[in-house]
Image (cartoon, rainbow, N blue to C red; front, side, top):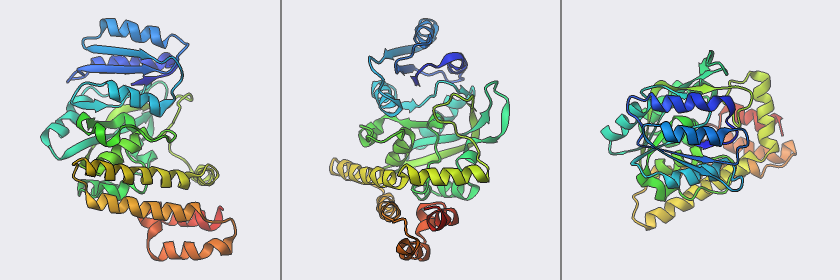
Length: 319
């Protein structure tokens, strides 16, 4: 778990660890320079918890992804879970996800759904998978071991719902120097060498409280339009090129060290690099970018590597 000024939300998360039907063997917490009492609360919890708690206080602010990398590197157990500072885990979360991994040697990671709630834990009427557009059709693909086809399109595994085998750290560590990508990076990296499973149940209460660093919420049509414009403004397609190029290169490295790759995942990474690169290179002129749009429409690129008609409309009308 990583923390930064966790405020009133931390206690609920820590208490949910203690209530687990299969308790954790170890909790590693890396604090990123909190100044609100978070560190004192963590040290008190470490003294009282019925399992090992290691608290690391960073001398300087690392930011989220490097801080999670540090925490993962310090874990000593067979299975690792990411945890946010402000959620609440259901009592059987660890037991359920570890059970999937123990029963399936081919599974390198597993993730669940979660219920989105307000600051008082009142349900907001939708789930994490709803907010991530993780559709029933995509879930069927994951169940059919075609999960990479989903992961190259978009992020569907929220880090706080993910569990994975520590034996794959050589595949995904170190994390790439990209902004806030630890959950997507771990999921796709493991997917290249092992299967990723899903549990179609809510196993956490994902709290939205107005101070989340990343709040996964459901957007209306106007907000979706604004998000699509923001994607273009922040260079999201360049980020995709770097992310999947780094993943492809990492696959090559671990293959040279003896790992067996899933060739279909490598091929999908190559396809995503090509598609995202074309979209990143599009000029502002409609007629200049139209030939690329037509090609990516005819060859299905928008549907294999993006959001289909919505991505097509983004390139047609929002640039």
